[in-house]
Image (cartoon, rainbow, N blue to C red; front, top):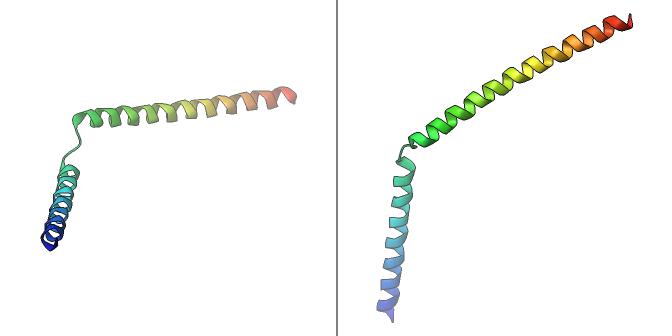
Length: 72
């Protein structure tokens, strides 16, 4: 019975060590080029969104100015 307990303990320790090593290997792998292109596309979309928001703000400002000028 003690032999089975010792064997089980050793197997659990070896399994946990092996599992940790696998996670370390996965963490060290560089991200694939697929993610790089997706991140670049996302960044470009954010830039376009910022341009559109700036243009919309300018348009609102012009509308507000023209509306205020018509009231006077």
